[in-house]
Length: 189
Image (cartoon, rainbow, N blue to C red; front, side, top):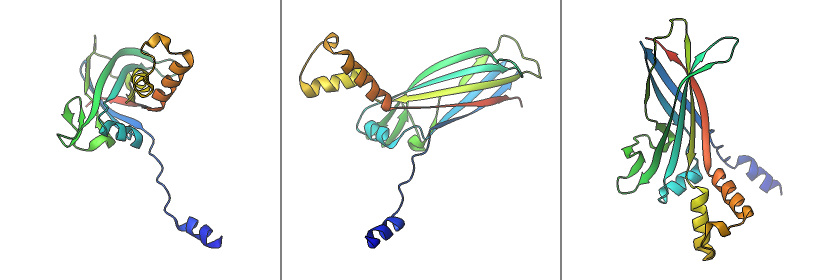
């Protein structure tokens, strides 16, 4: 027993999975605001395996430009939603984001740059902030339903599925989803 306990003390510890996060940099010149968002550690090992097997990941990016007001609620200036596709191409030998090769792999996803043109130039004292939300989903409830149907060779109509089955498929699909949120202050050169 002492030998087993001693081996447990010296056994290599499993590395904890890094939490997904989002960073961004934003600049304003005159009325134009440009944001460059990045998602870090968004692709978990189980999602990476699924994507390498041929599934594509749907990456939903939501950016919101806010006018920060101290001691009060921030006001929304503009917002943008993007959908990008993350895939692994064995033929190209690497990761692709919307058909563009990723040099660093799935660890750092350089997302599409977003530019806004403001209606009027803000005051010099106005503080602008960008909130970024990213969500990666590899498998949807509908695709899981098709896999379940194929495995069971059962019901062919979506309407015949019970509420319990639909709820279970939705829950499994949500487990295969990762997301992160972040914010950055708009800088003026």
